[in-house]
Amino acid sequence: TVKTGTVNVTLIPGDGIGPEIAQSVKEIFDVAKVPIKWEEVSVAPILVDGVSTIPADAISSIKKNTIALKGPLATPIGKGHVSLNLTLRRTFNLYANVRPCRSVEGYKTAYDNVDTVIIRENTEGEYSGIEHEVVDGVVQSIKLITHEASSRVARYAFEYARANNRLHVTAVHKAPIMKMSDGMFLRACRELAPEYPDVKYDEDLLDRVCLRIVQNPGPYADRVMVMPNVRRTLTGLGCVCVAARAGGGRGRGLADRVGSACAQLYGDILSDMCAGLIGGLGLTPSGNIGKDASIFEAVHGSAPDIAGKGMANPTALILSSAMMMRHMQMYDFADKIESATLRTIAEGNCTRDLRGKSSTQQFTQGIISKL
Ligand code: NAD
Image 1 (cartoon, rainbow, N blue to C red):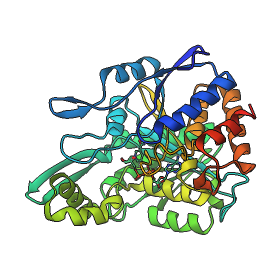
Image 2 (image 1 turned 90 degrees about the vertical axis):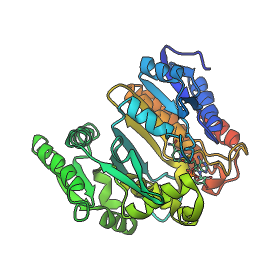
Image 3 (image 1 turned 120 degrees about the vertical axis):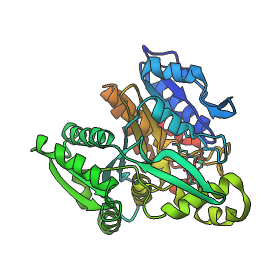
């Protein structure tokens, strides 16, 4: 625990590579003398009435501090397990998931001009987790969207647009197919748009946005894209997949084949695609903004394939910590740490995911030497 500061922030190192990248952040904050005191908690699940849940002291720490930095949490698959990420989102009403994605100067990819901001509704849609077995082998998964939550995230997007001088909000949807749910989301956005005459508002289809961004990301650099929390097209397969995973049996092969598609929702698809354009998941931060607290985290998961090997890229969590500091109005510390991190990458001191040779520690030391 770093004891240099005055503001308490909850730190959840998380699973897999989580503790390694959290260690980098702690060392960097220590050297930069950021006035933050980490309150480190584990969210390793405990069983209550046969259902896994988050320990009470982790919840009370976030409640008290209202700000947390979180490493990735592995989502257990099977009966009796609730996604801990989902539990945190629900407990703290983390309704807006903000995912900026910007080209990293000095790290060459096909494009130098990626600069997207995706804001995703975080509590509803198919992340509601409402599922039940209709008959053996057939499971129904319900997408739940309310006007209230749609309106809340839409307002956040318009406010974000103003605060960050990106005066263009695009609602991304699949309303021609999801007529009622996405239709209502669009209605909520349209109702608010007149309150923000300085912000241009328009709408676009998810697939068309994906196509256009990979052809030319330039036009998306002036805007904020807001979207509901909805899976794209694999609703039926997704449902079968969940059933097969939970119960094993004949559906398991199908579950394994379509498994990764099942978890993909609009914002996930789009933000992972944008991450791919700038160099991968090791680079993209996010913030979960809520009514009762805000939790900042990398977009990526626990990367079990490289955990414990000293290969993890801590950049995404470091940039998430910079988002967190800006949220706390610690702009100078955020700028200093972000700039040191990006300059380290530009010098070629990179982890392997960015075609470099550095270990997590060597990269971290490179940043520290610039502070
Ligand atoms: P992942 O993001 O963990 O890994 C995908 C690929 O990207 C892997 O090859 C991994 O090695 C690489 N990668 C990811 N982050 C990296 C980093 N910082 N540095 C270098 N390489 C990195 O996705 P996954 O394998 O599908 O998921 C693993 C676990 O993480 C699952 O249990 C999933 O549910 C969970 N998950 C958690 C969160 C979260 O807590 N917010 C988000 C996504 C996935």
